[in-house]
Length: 95
Image 1 (tube, rainbow, N blue to C red):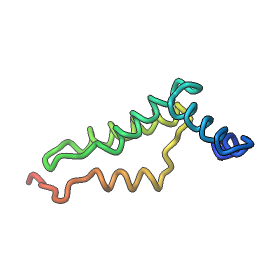
Image 2 (tube, rainbow, N blue to C red):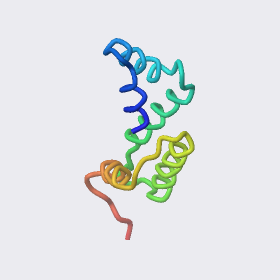
Image 3 (tube, rainbow, N blue to C red):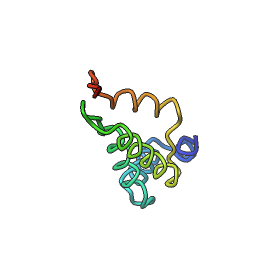
């Protein structure tokens, strides 16, 4: 919501575009690149079929906390979606 207000306060489309570029190019916000990297990491993490579930969850929630610290929180619904997509199609259970 804050971003929308910030951009909509500009008078012309050119000014709006310049504002978006300055924000997302990281010129006015030094944490922007880190937020992008962490979001990418969160979406790229996948649990291997024989992988350690505990370690996988720890890694995902660690990134979630880092994003929260950078004021770019991931809400619970998004986290559930990302988590489900990170799981393998088939799980092998050791018996």
